Each structure stands twice: as C-alpha cells, then as structure tokens.
Length: 313
Image (tube, rainbow, N blue to C red; front, side, top):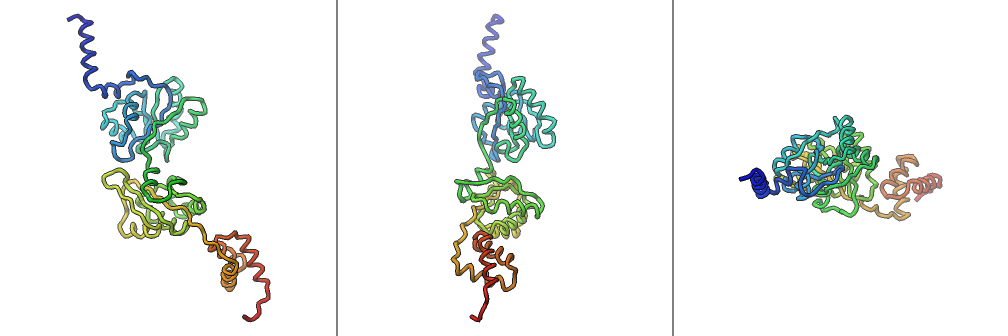
C-alpha cells in the first residue's frame, strides 16, 4: 500500500469512528464558527439539559471562560467534549477580562459559561459583554436552562410580568430596605437565597411585602427537587421547623394584591380612632398604609378632623 493510500484509509477510518466526538473535539470541524464571544447556557442541575447546539459548539471554540474549571470540566467530560478552559470569576475578572478581550480582538472564538444555567445571571460576565460590545466585537448567545425562569413557571404564580432581584443582602436591615423598594413593584418577584438565610429572608419578606402567596424552588432538575408553595409566612414557619434546607434555592413571591378602595366614612372612622392616640401625621400614615390611599390626601382629611369642633355624639 502506498503512503498516499495509507493516509486515505486512515482518514476514512477516523471519519467512520465516533463522528460526533470528532466534531465536538476539534475547532477545525467542517462547520466554521465565526469569531466572537458566545454566551452559552449550561444545565442548572440535570446534565442532559445541555442543548444539542451547545454540546456541538463547545468543542469548536478556542477557549471556554468559566467560573470554576472543575465544575465545567466535569460537565464537558460527561458529554465527551474537549476544549481549553480559562477561569473567569469575580475574584480574577479585573485581571482576566483584558486578556479575553485581547483574544477576541485577535479573532478567536470564546465561550462564556457559568457553573449552572445562563451566564451573566449573578456572575461577572456582564462586564465582559459590555466592554466587548462597546468595542464592536461580536457577542451572541446560545440560550438554554435558567433557574429564574424554571422557578417562575413551576411556582404557579403570575408569569406575565416579573422582576428578578438576584441575591438579597445577607444582613437583615439591608435586606428589609431592598424589600421595601420592591414592595410596590406590580410584578411577581424572584430572588436567589441560601439555606442558612432562607427563614429570615421569608420572614422579612412577609413583614415588608405582606403575607403574599409564594413558592420556594430548591434543587431544580436534580434528584431531590422540591417546589413548596404557600404564603411567605407559612413557608417561613415550615423551614424553621424542618431545618436548614440544602442546595440551590429560588424564592418566588406573587405581585402585591390590589388594595381595597375605602369609602369616605371608613377613612374618617379609621382616622378618628387613630387620632385618639397619635399625632395627625402618624394617624395619616397609618390609615394611608391600611387603605392604600395617597398619604397627602389622608393627611389633609386628618388635619380637618383635628380642627373640627367635637361635640357630644
């Protein structure tokens, strides 16, 4: 057999053997990938939730920027993908971002992934995207799993309008201040939480937001997935009794309930009762909070009642 025949036979054998592996493991595959930054969603738990497109694409990149190389390497190994990994996380982002941008300028294909789910959700990736876009470098996405949307659609709460608040502050005073900002938002609220802080977070949410319908989604798509529904206060009592939960946690809370419209007689009765033990300003604040009416309107009525002569009734 000639040398040329030997090479041809070898190539044919390689072509027949593990064609998917050959495509995923080489950036020189037939389907040429355009240079740029690709935001690639990975599973939030179940390894088989990696999309077919992401599986085939990740083996053709020049590098994968990831939060934890050990976590990403495990996922790639499960899917038979070979690709260079570059750590990119909150502790090294300032140092690594210029290096990644330099590689993008040189025409490389860089994938950005998080440890779980869609990148940029509670990770430093958005700064890389912002700077790449500002330079006119190509940025695109390979969408897939998201803990935020998964929790929302299984919660049983209104999905048509929602606000994602990330992680709430760990300290109680700061957490309550953020919840107070979120209270009037006319949308379903979603936030990430940790096991040690879950009970306090639910309790503060019940106090500040009101005892709204809610759901706690834990370990989504994993073996011990749990979605528990109830009011915020009932959920706080459950986890206080059950003990600290483990795993990744998403809390979903319903939008604020519309405040009942109080008639003039009800407002006046409430103000008269409140004025027995409170100043005009304090009484107006209490009644405005209870009725949902504008504080200025209630204050004006409270002031008028205070000035009215009060004869026997």
